[in-house]
Amino acid sequence: MELQKFVTKVIEGFGGVVEPVEYALCQVLIPEEYKSYFQNKTELELAFDFEVAQENPQSEFVTFGSFILEQVQTIANQQAISTLRFAEVERQTLANPLKKITHFLEEENGKINILDEINVMGVWAVFQFHITFISDEKEESLDQVWVNLITGEISETMRQEQNSIMYTSDPLYNHPIPVDLNIEAAFTTAYNHVENKTEKQQKQRQKDKQLQKDLDRIETYYQELIKENDRRAQRKGLSEEKVEEITTKSKVIALEMNKQIEEIKQKYQGHTEITIDHGILYFVPLLQYDIETIFRSNRKQQTLYYNPITKQFIVSANNKVALEQKLQKISK
Image (cartoon, rainbow, N blue to C red; front, side, top):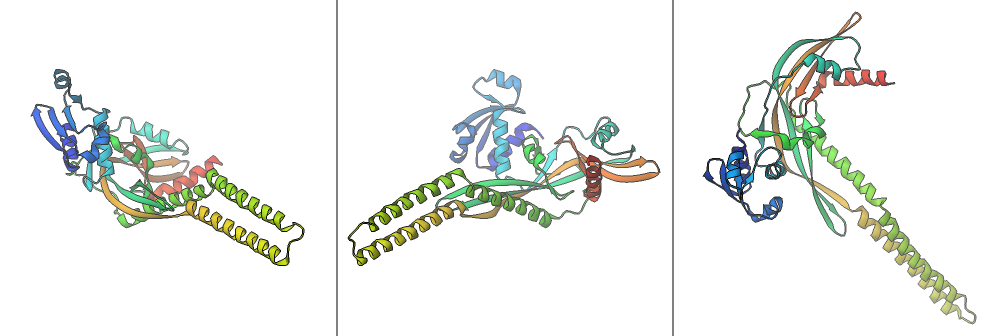
């Protein structure tokens, strides 16, 4: 897909206006709520060709790695411009696959042979969560989780590489999906991940140095009041009624101290609310390799997937556990 078409679609998707001026040159109006992404500018002139950019020095050249493209991709990934995204990759081939697979499985014993190589479609479910931490104040944040539907695992690498993915809303490749998709299980995995993460953050708040500093300050203040009150009670010539009055006051001060301490703890502890903001499915063409490992008289078959976005291999969910167990034994 042409870069100009991608940028135009995203800008129009979040409410902007794109007016073509001439070949590869456009004037753009950015909505007020998005101007912070573009250095507080609401009017831009974008060039999508190097020579056109040179002929129009007032324009900004949009190409891979440019500031404008990175900002457009950031908005596209934060806002659900589309719910189905079909990635476009430059090449669907891998040079020297056997060498690269052997290196990837270097802890494996035996000779590796490639039995079959086919093009398939990998699918990632992306869940954007809205997280609200409520105490005496409200803190809001977003957390995006990518789940590989082939393995059922969270993919931090794809989340980090998302700005390098060019996509369309229409299918580009007629490749089969190698597994049954379980969106419900993926959502549960993503939600549990965010929930565990926020719980750790809450516990960290409770260990925060500022919390202990505030607790020490309150306790020191009220303990000094109690000591001063106790010294007053030890003066000579006081009636029993006066001593009782001072003693009661000390108890009231202690109760107030405990109340203040609990309020401070509640402030730091608070509670968290997690809601789903939106979800997206990314379809990415992969290379599937069915391989065989021969070690002595044993033969083992497994499936690997090569991801052209991350330039990494993915172990099939069916043999991932067995492979990890073997690698753990070797490492010991």
